[in-house]
Image (cartoon, rainbow over all chains, first blue to last red):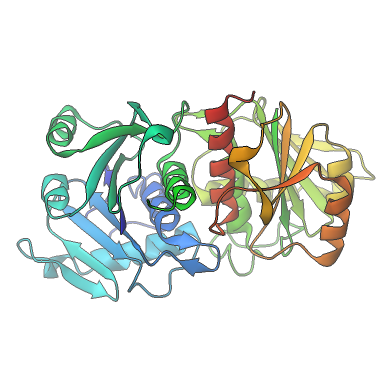
Length: 194
Length: 194
């Protein structure tokens, strides 16, 4: 299975935001929505072997599982609406028990550290300082940890340094989070998840 | 220079559509908006060496030039608003003379054939039947022709067969147009536009 963990530093933790201003009053939820779509959609279908975890302001993690999610529309607004309706159920997420708010979508009251701790696979941080991806043998269960429009904080970097199996670079340009997800998928597609 | 030509079969040719329903009443303008952003944006900046051409229902072509465009926001809604405000000036596009509706954005009353005819470079069609991109030497002025959520029509295929320099495949999965643009950029970034 392929997994993507996206850290949304300014992300909303409640459903009180308008769909007409995702970059502003919704704390760059546009970016998280695009990342979700890049992770789970291929042409005319869903990547069933993929799971994406959106870490919202280090307070909640919203997980979407490609094998069980239904009715995922390809546009940013619909994806943001899905995230918002998930957050409407935030009070049901108690302790560290995930609550399934709709098929394939769960919300858990945990931040980045607990989220990564709960995953099984080879954890990669993406960064310009990493090994070129073309020299890396893709593992069978890769987990990519990415940040939003902001760099990882010092605390996040320290945490990641402890848990990652390696830092890899997708290329010489720094690109958007959703673009990086598309490129990482393509790397695994081409190399056949050897 | 890198260029992307995206064929929007159902795209609107006037500004009479709501930003709140891009996939439906705006003829999949969500897809064209995402393609525009994938082509022109990198992290915290614009790809100045890139130009994107959106072919709208084979009637108009809207071109955005990364070297001169200003104020490009990263979200789909803002990009769609930019496309819509360009279409408000459609009456100024007469004959085959491009009209610059705002800095770096031009609208021309031409379809796919005339658009490709006017470009200088190596024209690639992207398709699963093509040579693997990893075996292809990137040219200095690549032009990628992509379709939206629908396949190229028979007429478009016949036209492209006449003008393309080659068909290339980015990988074994069929992916969304904007994802393909991100992957094509990464290919050129990695291989250094040799």
